[in-house]
Length: 142
Image (cartoon, rainbow, N blue to C red; front, top):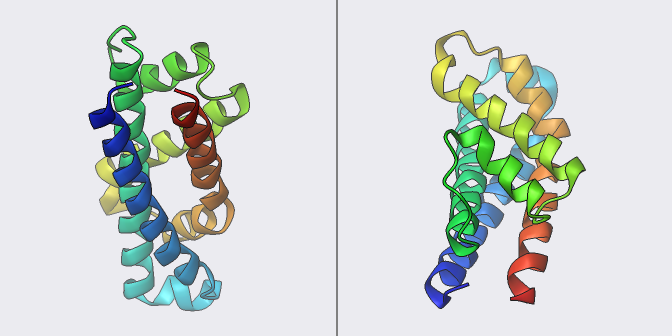
C-alpha cells in the first residue's frame, strides 16, 4: 500500500471518529425527543450518511491499494473486500446493510421515517467501529 493511500485512509478514519462522537451524543437523546426535534433527526441523518460515505471511500481506496478488479457497482466493493479477506463475512453483512441504508438516506429522503433513523442510531453505530478495527488491522500489517 502506498503511503498516500495509507494517509488518506487514516485521515478518513479520523473523520469517522469525529462523526461517531457526534452520533453517540445524539444517541443519548430519548426516542420521543428525537422524533419531535428536527435538529436531532437532521444531525443524525447527516452524520450517518457521512459515516457511510467514509466506509465507501475507504473501501474504494483498499481496492486500489490491493489492485483488485474495478467493481461494476458499489455493492460489489464490499464483496471484493470480503473475498480478499479484508473484512469478515459478518462484517460484510453489516457493511452491506449500512450501504443499503445510505441509499435510503440519499435517494428516498423525502419519505424517510424518523423512527428508522433512530433505530439505526441506536443499533448500528458498532458496525462503524467494527469496520474501523478491521481496516486498522489490515493496513497496519502492510
